Image (cartoon, rainbow, N blue to C red; front, side, top):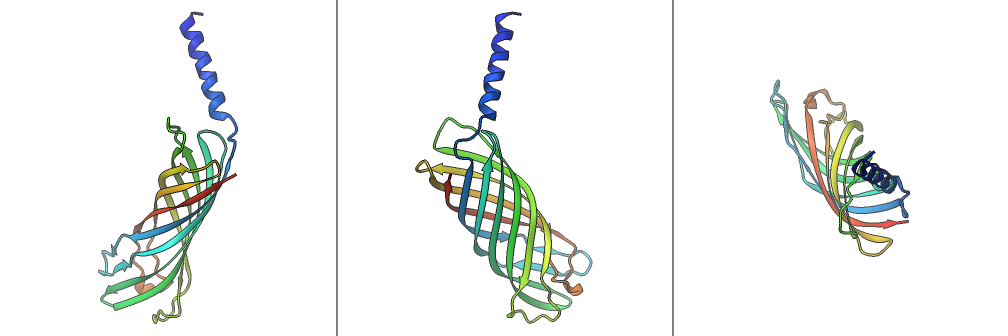
Length: 202
């Protein structure tokens, strides 16, 4: 066996050992302020359209990093906005609290800068749409929609245990109708969720 093959095998084992080594501080708690920007939707059959107002909210999460490359993360988010439906039925405005529950697989991307830790994520969860008392449409009920989540961001280490996070998340889900048949669009929509905040590692 020549030296090139031996060097390749040795390099592979060194890389594997580094990648699978336990992370010194595997746990991280994050608190972020978010902006939420939803795509407008229009039904093809009855020309019913939906516009969701832009809003701000917060996102809290816990993540655990298994090794240099992989980890998992769970998040809870909250916002309140106005959802306007218009069409042949007239116009209906619904104020709703939106609760976001997601779990994601996280792929960490090693870089030369020790204080910057980029990552990408993908997972699934649920968006819970809860109409408030200010909504005057009859028959509204709380509704839960399954969601696919993807995104990525940067962790900036300020100290050994504390830092800042900048992130973008996208959520794909079916448009809610609050169990009112006249508001049903049967459309998939997208919610953009840029955010910035801080984290604590331990």
